[in-house]
Image (cartoon, rainbow, N blue to C red; front, side):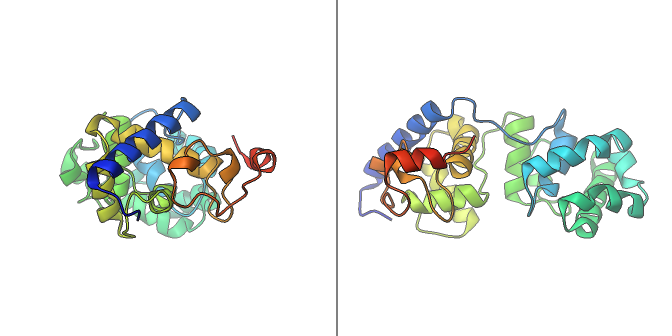
Length: 229
C-alpha cells in the first residue's frame, strides 16, 4: 500500500470512486432477480461461474421452484440437473436447498433483511449477505468478491487479503451511502478494464491514482482495444 496519510488515502479512494462512476454510470448487480429470495439463490449459484451462466439457469429454476418452500421440497436429482450448467452442481443443489429449508423453518420462508440473520443461513457468508442487503433491501455494504479484492490491492486501498479486513478498509474510506455502488463500480472495472492477467492500463480512468499503473498494456490504442462491455 502507498506510504500516505489516512486522509490522503481517503481522498484518493473517493476520487477513484467518482472517476469510476463516470466511466460506469450504469454499474449494477449483474445477476437477474425479482425478489430477495431469487437474488440470494442466484448469488450462491454464482460461485466459481459467471453471472451470465447463472442468468441462463435461474429462469428455469425459479419457474419450477418460485419460493423457499418449493425449493426446499425439490427432488435433489431434478434440482441437480437444472443446476448442472453452473458447475459444482451437486454441492450447489445441497446449498440452495439447505438455505431454503432454513428460510422456511426460521423465517417463514422469507429472506431476512439483517446481516446477523443472513450469515446464519447455511452457505451464506458476509459477501453473499452484503449482495442481498445492498441490492434487494437497500442496505449499504461492500461486497468483497474476487474483483473487489484484486482491485483494492492494486489501487493501494488495502494491504490485506482477508475479505473481512478489506471490507473494513473500504468502508473506512468511502461514505456509507456509496458502499453498494462502489462495489458495483469496482466489479465493473475488474470485468471490463482492470483484468487479472493483463489490465488495460493505457485506457484506465484511474491510472494516475493507481500505484500499480503500468503493470498491463500501456499503449492507449492497444489498451482501448482490450476493453470489454
